[in-house]
Length: 132
Image 1 (cartoon, rainbow, N blue to C red):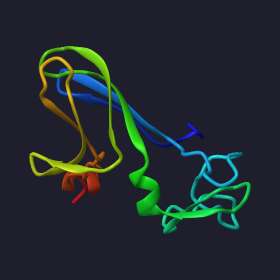
Image 2 (cartoon, rainbow, N blue to C red):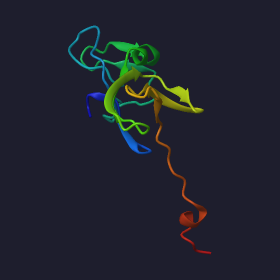
Image 3 (cartoon, rainbow, N blue to C red):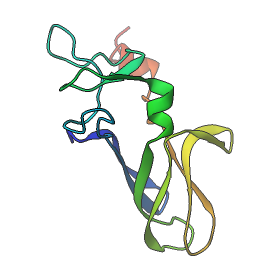
């Protein structure tokens, strides 16, 4: 997990998808993998506008870094049940009006999307435990 920027394991209707994005090697020193800068408390700064090499402190902005990354996917197609592997760019596109990493099944050529995981909202009864 430390070598991935993004990882997910999803069930898509009757199929599934496991997707990951590896960290990029530092283009300057080639000794370490690029990541978000580390804050004083030892945790990565998720909101930072740059990626940084921990070895040589070389920095690259988010847009340039993300344009060079690829999403690798192992999947079972929910339409034809074909199992395979695919790669796509690390950029969410619209699929049925929803942002998703989109790839194409190798057998049936249908588009499959990996959407963001949404938090489920508690119903009003769950929120107040049914007490009145």
